[in-house]
Length: 124
Image (cartoon, rainbow, N blue to C red; front, side, top):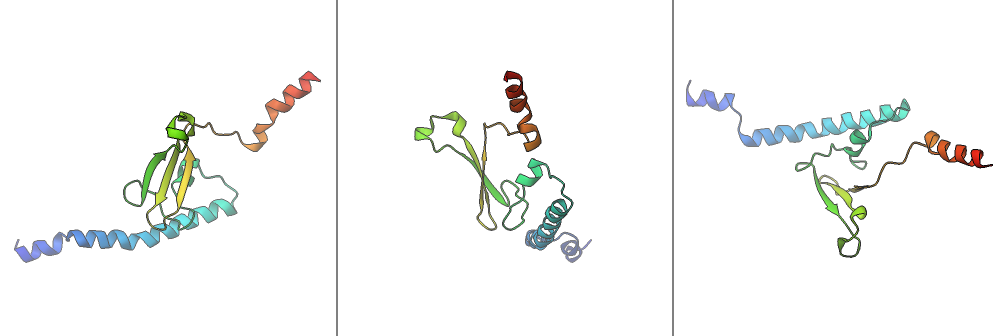
């Protein structure tokens, strides 16, 4: 093969970055559609999926490329380990999402009061 032919077969690095940039609006559109279908169909997305989508600009949050992640502890001197908060910042719009690191998830509402109401009924 001649040198000119190989240039056409193997695109330059800047072409790859332009290709990725051209796919970003498509990605946003698909994530927006995913969210709207789950809302309309009253289906719950898993927390892992929900936490990886920016609520402001509908960008998929990927560590290192579209978002930055760090752990903060704003207690005095960082002495309270249960006060750790994971902060994900969207590089597209700048929105920060904060998630408690060590906290357990609260049960869903129908399951939240069953154990406490049964305990109260048994005591009376």
